Length: 395
Image (tube, rainbow, N blue to C red; front, side, top):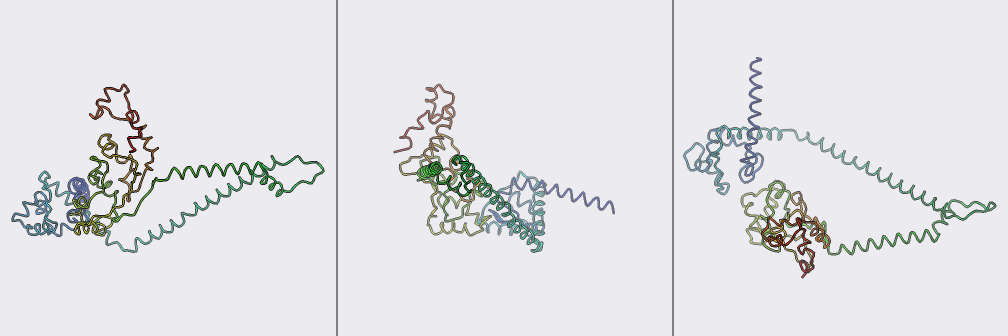
């Protein structure tokens, strides 16, 4: 009995290690086109063993060279061909460099993940309701401390105002004669509030506040920091640029060639979504809008976010191609944004500060070779090469 249990644990431990190795191989070779529990470029791999009749030897042959298997006379060639045609005849990479043992470890990982997903689905629905209600109760209770902080803060401010007023009344009250009756607290307070000095201080504070608010409001005219319009399609930069590491230049093709970075056309979207027709967050709803635009020949009416005044000239190619400026310098951490918004205010002062601080690499770019020969400074900012000249940015 002890020997049997020992063998059981040895087999379980070896299976776990085998699955962990398979996970690493799966992430390195398969994750770009497949997921276990959802369809990506290829089919979801959950239940793949059942669909192939549990014959791992045939699965290994198919993975090593899918085209040879489809066109050959193997046990499951008919099923493989049907799968190939169902997914728009997308050719699967031939993994001839993987050994049979490595492929079997990948299959073991897929099998273990499929079983884990099946176990999770079998869990009673009521098991999650308690957590949801608990979190809801916790969320409602979390507002209590905030309310107490606000109440205490307001009370402290009120006490400070009362103490300040009483101190002013003692300073400003006239010298009392011994025989005169002592004024009440309300009378002393009124004498302070109605005095010229107090009214003069209050008037000065109000004037300073109004001037500051007016200047701030005037300087914000034409600036749209935080602007986040509703787009016709719920496009997630966090998914595309963050999770899948798609370079900004792949979609915004004009960024290295001209003045505008350009808004992507539908055919750029279709390079990927011709195969990926179901998203991880919105399912088929939003991608369906892209497919409809492609089929109808009608462009997607994206709403522009970053707008500069008509009298301002800005060239993306000069900054990105020549200057080597990263997109995030102006647009913020786009790879972390679910919906893009204007991160910087893009004001004149903001641009000038950037030109004063940004150092120019005079050695790595042949464009600056002649300037580098003429200048003696080791470090040169954009300001030193004409970055603050009015005609550089204004027509």
